[in-house]
Structure formats: C-alpha cells, structure tokens
Amino acid sequence: MRSESSEGIWTSRGDESLELGVTFKMSSDGLEVEVVAGQLTICHEGRIHQFVQQVEQGSFSEQITAGKHQDVLYVTERAVFRLGTEGLELIEIAPGIDLQGDVLDQMEFRPRIDLVRTMAESLFRL
Image (cartoon, rainbow, N blue to C red; front, side):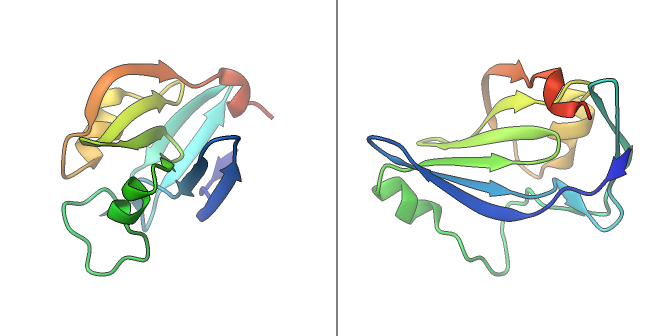
C-alpha cells in the first residue's frame, strides 16, 4: 500500500486541558511511503522539508498555546513530536523508521530527545 498522509488540525478536550494536534507530512512534493506487515518504509523522500528553522507564513502560534497551557502534538507519517517549554520533543517513531536518516536528517534543527517510543505496529496494518 502506498499513500500520502493527510493534513489537518484536531482538538480534544480532556478534563483539565485542551489538546491540539497538527498532522502533516515531514516532507512534501514527491513523498512516497509503503506499509508492509506493520512496518513503515520511506520509498522516496519528498523534495521540500517541513521542519524548518523559519517559516514565511504561519497560521499557528506556539507562543499563544504555551500561554494557555495546552498540550500540542505534531503528528507526521513517521513521528510524533510534543511542543514543550524547550521546543519540540520527539516522543514516538513509526516501526521500520530509521531515527537518524528518516527523521533527524529531514529536519533543519534538532528536536529534544529523551525517551522515544515506537508506535504500535497495529497502527500500520490494514
């Protein structure tokens, strides 16, 4: 199965906080991924990287959400990041993904990395 991930914003209200999630691809313009037996493989990397130092235009303010004490997650086809007080923190990667080559080398900056979990393989099965 080959696919391109969808993009969007989702929210859920818990008892004490609002959780905001943003989904997008780590790269665009040509990204091709394959899912086989619960493993994600990047067949062709996109030409345009999405995790950059500076954006030309944005519709989301990290400073505003930080002031509201909202949990913010960035979910991509291969990794999940949390916005923390010290910037982005990598918290999960998809099974089959190489942390260095498929995630870190596709970013213009280094996220905080403490404990990185592997997503459940069941999320990558049809």
